[in-house]
Length: 344
Image 1 (tube, one colour):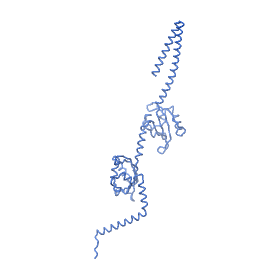
Image 2: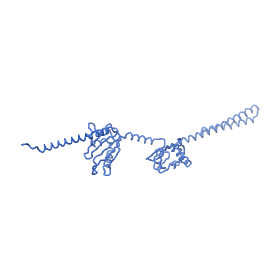
Image 3: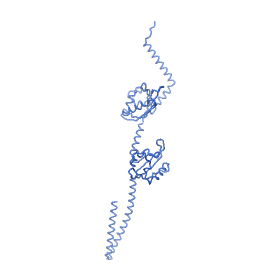
């Protein structure tokens, strides 16, 4: 009589058969899709982005490429052992709550995707910026099942933005963007020159700053420069918030800003240069007058010496006295002239 197998033995045989069946199915699918799978993995490994596929139900990463493992992996662990704790541990502590909140918000019924920027700290302590974008895959009932995402290292872009902002803040030339007749952007130097705040300028037209005598002139030159009909800068005066006059050298160029046409202007304060030019002009005029006066004094001294000399030879006291009076007058004029030059 044949011995009947126990329940445990039957269960083991069933599980073995199921495993064998699953293996055959996998092999059959591999014949058809193996090439595509290999192509996808090769493409993923060559990608410049970190790629991941996360199962929300089983709370496991089903797929990650090498870049992802390099960002969030721990030494001695492969991609199949990566956990959300590993990922969170690499994210900068100040950004973790924000990342978690953004991810949870993307799982809401009316959402299908999400993105967030955060910092990652590597084992050496260096900080890098990441831009994480993902899509939420749902089942037939609308329940979120998996998340597939791409993470790009944006550190270089962030550093470029920081450098650009620093250069804008420290620029010695004012700059601004005008769109639809209103200021859309001004740098700190522009604020310093005009003495208006950013909020005040955003409610103003650029021509509101221009001195009344130069409004039409500035409008004409700016239009020509925007049309490419003029390349050299133009000079004019503006009235700042305190009513002071500042002299400006300006250039403008046409740009696209926020998808629409705008004007980018560079606004240099040349008030000190104008003052120097005015002083040099005044100095030149003063030197001309001084030279003319000096020649007159020297001519007068020559005449005085002639009167004195001829008076001695002709024994005419009156002529000598006249020569001395003339000499005193010329010397007094020279003294005043020198005093005026010294204290100009």
